[in-house]
Image (tube, rainbow, N blue to C red; front, side):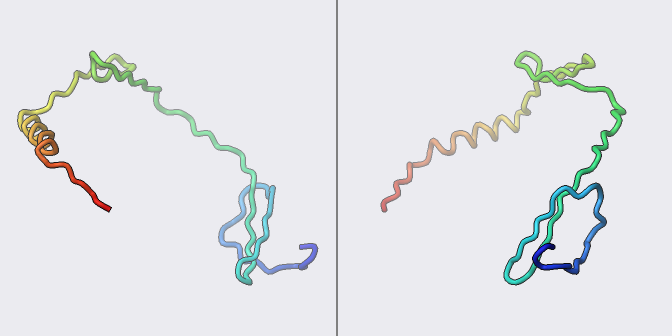
Length: 99
């Protein structure tokens, strides 16, 4: 460093790529260095075909391969529980909070 001279460092992991920017900071008497590097992007090869999903109102879901899924209907026990739980708040008296 121009003003401080050579500073010993502890490298926690190997530095990959070319160093583009270095920031030196001090916090409560300790010095910290962070470095930004530039790497070549590795783009993985696509091994599977693309899949599109259409979510609509008439058919629940349709895949790009032509597979169509119907709308899932709730079971009778789920309907009974849903009705019971949806009526619960309407039977309660409103809470009044006085400050």
